[in-house]
View (cartoon, one colour):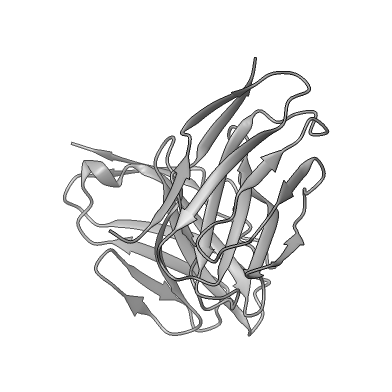
Length: 110
Length: 114
């Protein structure tokens, strides 16, 4: 699987949009971009995934650049409960495991 | 509610003892997985199962064993051969192993050595 690069930490003000970047410059055409988050001592929570088009669900939006070498997860109105470690993962279409890196620790501040 | 249930939440193992971690899902998913997470690190795949009565080794299967006798259940045994078992163990499931199917995780079991 392609490797990903994320900033180790970010802060965001409550109520503002949180934009979390991810670089995956070696991604190939059959690899999906996934985002998960993990709150301390809990299992990872699935947020969203996409192949090449932008995606939106009730939790977040995923913006993938046209060359697919980077993506951004957007939490439109961050709350204190969104404080967590966010993982960006790329995964081939037939791959069975999720290779989590170190992620980005997002802290939402009042 | 549909989901993945892991038990117990905390488990302690004595030296030389085997312990079994439970994972049950009611999502009707075919595929199930076991991961290990060490402090400050990402997840590493131990075993996975695409379907009942079938399972495959992941990256760090040594010292672990699994069974998949029922679709809903995928227990993990940490054997005495696993010399460094202290970790956070996570079970996940998905509709299939297809990369377009997200994996959904349980809340984990934290294993410690007495």
